Image (cartoon, rainbow, N blue to C red; front, side, top):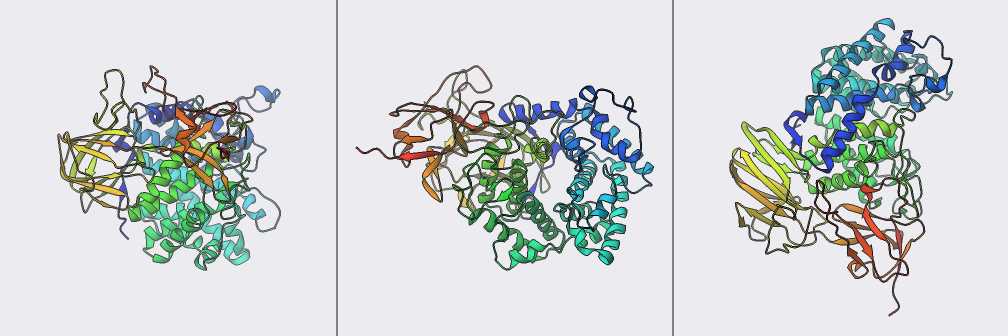
Length: 612
């Protein structure tokens, strides 16, 4: 099975100065500062290796260990290291970070040391007997989830940094799993699908795709008969009240199996899942559709709106499902969805000060984000956060090598240097912002309007390829596009799947794009008088603890909200997407949700239609 599109490698795309660069750098600093010994602490303990200085602990409050879900007393201990390895490997591939490269090599060598101490196969941070407990019916907290993260981290380390020792450790773990699953097939077949094993199908299929080792295909086949697949095939609601983050990775496994085998049944499962999870269920303006980690019933978003909404892991994992669908279809439906997740999940649930995540995204009146600490929490969402903040280089461009088409999926300042089919290309994407010495774009098109959606593309290398630009679903008018200073007439470029196609690009060409956006209200499906305010893909948060009703027609928000622009001397020379209300008993300010740090905020407001 050949994908319609492929993404570029981490070393082919560089993020330029700005919002995304800053968030990536905060994440990179955190990866650098974490202590190797603490990251490995539970692997050392399981292998019987004494951690220096910790033969006994006289003052637990001062001991140099990681706590929370990484505490030696937690059954999920050790999961974070796998996330760390995946994130660090991506950053190393993208930034050539020597410090992280040295750290990751040391971690891998120490994991191999632990594996040898354990007999040559098992390298995990938890006892092997945790897997036996799954056959007894006694409670045990997700041992397969924990080990999946290690396997994922080892595979990503090999894929992105070429570390062969990581593949040796992975090979030993594969032997352990073949022995265990063979035993379980005879004694307790259901145990194979217990312990939150959702990611196992994808990671084993991916390992087979990377290595061609038959053992990984055998393991993928072992995990392929997922119960949720039958319910999805039958068209039943397979998600309502189910644990969201335990179901989404299973669908990633179906996607990888489709790519590995070409079996159309797997593709249908992924597409039907999307229909159930997104199309029919609906979603908050921020994209979430879960509360307290569980899928919300279809179209019941208002009823379930609370303080425990939009678990971050689900945002990350739904983006990964969308990436599969985008690569198969080339449809902007999925890149639009990813964009909303980026601004209202990846950015909104990452602290701009510390890089730490908020596990849930509260959506009640006077909400406050609860940030993780750097060393004392290590929630699952802390793991997916460090991975998500390293993903941006893989999300911006796609390639159709046969047709020589470069797709621009996300508008993020960046520089691409890679190949399109047999052609070398280099494309530089920048924002054009009014102010200082930067002249506004398209002066005949509202030159005084400042918009983050004015982009410039410079073709530095390439000859005769097609540039495909996404036209977002949120656009409020016609896109304005110029090629080498000449505006393309509306409707002239061919379009398909939410993208337009500009042919015959070559070195020296310059393309400017203006995507007009407008303020709008996104209403809850079951409470039509409640809405969040959005500009483009960006959800706005009202800075208020107690106001949750606004007077005005929500279909005409410009009548009671106005843009509040202020010049600043920063990467952007003006504050973006800032608004204030008017004609209210008490007026409030709105700012992008991703800018909220510790301020109380409100996302959804009730509509009070004026009587006049």
